[in-house]
Image 1 (cartoon, rainbow, N blue to C red):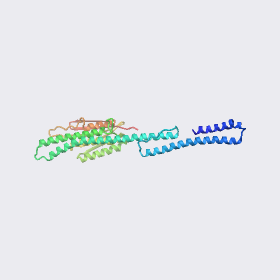
Image 2: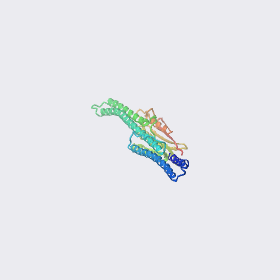
Image 3: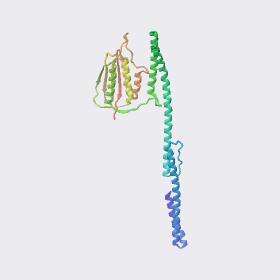
Length: 323
């Protein structure tokens, strides 16, 4: 715009000097006067333009301060089409992003409150029942084994319901696709697996079990996993062993690494009841091993398990991450 103003001033000066001035016999005073007229014209136009831009700049400054104060009503009007207009557009975009963030945070708070309320309701009711049944067993004035067994059975059933709910919460919470919340990272596999096996061995030894580890891995490798979810698998396996395994028999842990997969093998002997029937540890729907299968499937791996007489075997297979 300033360029066109200057061009207009030059054209006006030329027109006055070459068209009007010859009429007055090229009077030098008129030449100076016409030059002053063209310069004053340029000055007035530029002053008006600068004043308008300065006013718009002050408006931008005021609106930017309101934006800094997190005013939700800020919306800068767009004027002309220059650099200041571009700045105004950028500020409006920032305001839109801020409003989107505020709405997302508000929605997240509402969802968190809803989830907490739901968890409280789902867990509180069965826990209250469990406490009630256990108190009945503890406070019984007469030794009624049949009633105690019934109370204990009901309390155990309620406990499994709480466990199932918590497992489902881990699988489905904080997502809208029902696939669970996972944070995958690439890890140096050898020290990671050694650490997991060390903590697993320690937990089993504290439970009174002897652990025999067969580690056939020498070279380094990488795994793409969610460490917290993988730790859950090992926790489930330890819990399963403590619950069902024969403490007089050793627990065998083995590691095998091939080109594309890491295979972890766990073997143990199950307890026998007085009737000589082995306790079942085969997976059923909603069991801990079924949860392990869901987790390992998300890691593009697999878990296989079976029981033959006393022997129970689990094979946990994870894909190797190739860079």
